Image (cartoon, rainbow, N blue to C red):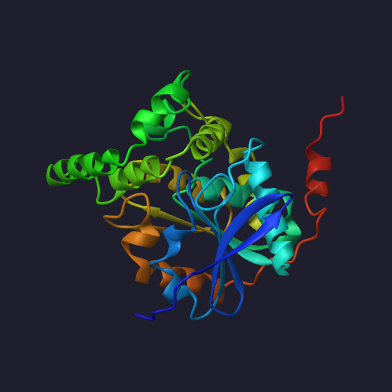
Length: 304
């Protein structure tokens, strides 16, 4: 396997430090990670993708090594933030690849800035249904601010691994999903990161499930080449969400990774790189304008 790794960089946007990682040359892939994660989620697949693409993988604000300010952690704010990062780096158009929370941001990015989006790739994406793991729903409960410090000690990582081992032996959970949650919670080791996590969770999740849905806009994907990638045994966001979205997105491509959990790009990086490369090679990137959706919105508007 190639040895290219993601190289970290830092810049300041709107007064806040943003860390991002880059690798490779070629057409740009914007890689957006999930909640309580970071750009390092792409480390195993990056050497393969960087052979043909320029990779730009930010730590979203409030995550990883980026700043954790008090402020707006909505999907729209994150989409604007990555637009500004791309502008600072001189990238006009990208194929946006979003995992979990990053999938919701990717869809918002395509909707807000169609002129910047050539293709849309959703990986175990949020925003496509109500179901989501109990631990993430619990973080939206009143009082989670006081409980979260108890869940973010380094001991949780070991507990998660031991529990994950038991569930895997009982064939009740796929490899990796519980470890993903445990590592995510363990990374919230300071007040700023915990508050950013809670603001982000509450922007998209409520105690009964995901509160944000893109289903009323999925038909718009007909003009942007779109691919959905999911792990067959995802226990954090079920694969049924991806299957339903595929039906609602005209012309979309669906790739389900047998035996994989919530992080298919980590479970099988070779296959992920292959399907993503093939998707980019066999589709023409969209060339839309900033006001592309306006005629559709005018047609849908009810002014009675």
